[in-house]
Image (cartoon, rainbow, N blue to C red; front, top):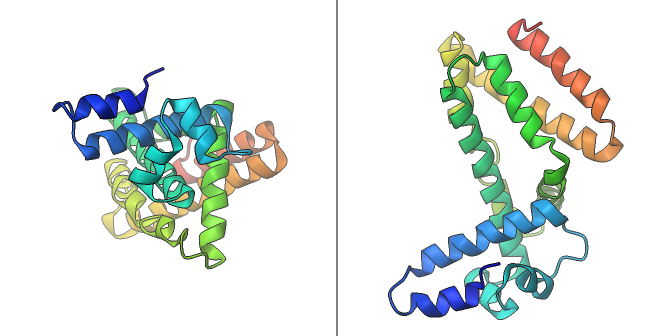
Length: 202
C-alpha cells in the first residue's frame, strides 16, 4: 500500500502537483469502496485503508460528502472510459459492447460503487445541498459517448440521442433492480431481452 501522506511530503520536493495528489486520493478511494463497500465508511477508516490521514482527506475534499461525490464522479468516468475502449475493440458488435459493459457494471466486486451511486443520488434528490453536485452531468456526461455509439451502429442521428437516453435509463434501472433484489439471473435475462429489442440481438 502506498502511503499517500508520504507521497504528499515527497511532492513538496517537486514530485507532483496538488491536482495529481487529489486524483491519487480519489482513485484509491474508488478502489477501496469498490472492494469493501460503504458500510460504516468514515474518513478516518477510509484514510487508514488507503494510507493517508483523515486530515489530508479533509484538506483536499473539505468533507466526507464532497469526497463521496468525487468517488461517484470518478466511478462514472471510469465506466465511460471503458465504453470508449470497448467500442474500439475489433470484432465487437454494439450488442457485444453493451454486454461487456454490463458484465463490468454488475461485477459483484463493484457493488459498493453502484450502491454509493444510488445513495448519493437519493440524497441529492431529497434536496441535500451537499449532494446536489452529483446530479450535474448525471445524464448529459453519458450522452456524448452513447450517441456516438448509436450513430456508429447505424442509428439515424436524429433518433440516436433518444436511444442513448433510453439505454442509459434501462441500465440504471436494472442496476437498481439488482441491488434491491439480488436476482442476478433475472436482471441478466432482462438485459438480454432489452438488447434483443434494442439491437435485434439474438
